Image 1 (cartoon, one colour):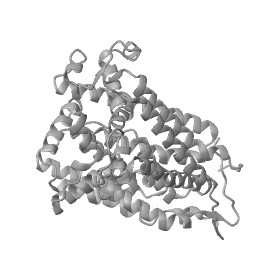
Image 2 (image 1 turned 90 degrees about the horizontal axis):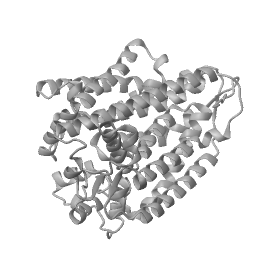
Image 3 (image 1 turned 120 degrees about the vertical axis):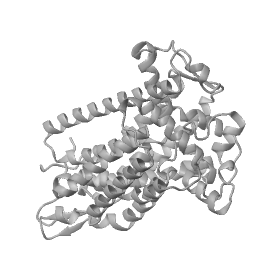
Length: 447
């Protein structure tokens, strides 16, 4: 690693990228190829502006936090920075991934046909909705593998060159099995998205050790992967429509009456009707369509959900085992009953989930500590290559990317337990990984 000064502007790069991301998604929601009936764009603009201001404030506080590092008497700091539970997590993630694919084979639910991913998705969620609220072997597997899988995808990738050959096979095995079982067999695009986001964060941090020329080439390669991912997702989206018997010719007649696609929009002139429909569905579904659901929820009164309604998996748990009626009182379900816009079938941003417990105003202030932790984690990564903060930063990156969609970190049973454990580990362990060797000062080079 080359000697260089700390580039303070580098501390704010995640913030700048996130602000651009939110501005893009809001703009695409307002002026993109999808039209929404009775869309209160002014209220959404004001609310999201307040969100960005408070998040930025928290981020700046986190960057300004003074960090007192540990100083050790050896240059072998890298050995100390290896996380003690990394290898155990790789083994556990691999075993649960193997168990998952075995259970799918036994149940006759494994379909590895890439050409039928769209149909696989339709079939999977038809079966999933039919058994909603029940707990199967896969539910238990998801619960167990949540945290080990994140550790594998983030720290396993980051330390890939320093772990043994068997553990390298384990990391690759988890990625391959996840793609086979979740992405292909179930048609779940988010599983592939998680792999890309977590691995992307780990590789970006790893690239700090590269020469400028190698880093530039590496970033071009990562950009190519992202483009391929977007094309893949767009094709899968179109396959889903085909599996349902829809096309660009009749899609508007089969959509919710509150929305439709404008095929005269320049977007479709550029990408064409078919590929453009898949791409527009991906962007308006995952990245920008949720702001419309937010606009509908902002019109409604607050009904408290006892601190549970912000997590779908926890809500189902309490309803099943305690007979509580929680989800019907959330902003999402009341919105669906009032306006006919899907609570779960559509994305509605993270805010109605949080607001069901904390109100819409309170939800905004939650992002001050989130921004603070996000910034502090990034600062510890840049200055000390802190692996525990890398784990936290990667997890919060997923949270922030899914802000226009839902409360991703608390939505599924696997994500919920992983979030709780990750926060606990970071809170109790991250400071001891801010290490400076006595004879080899920390060297920073971001540019």
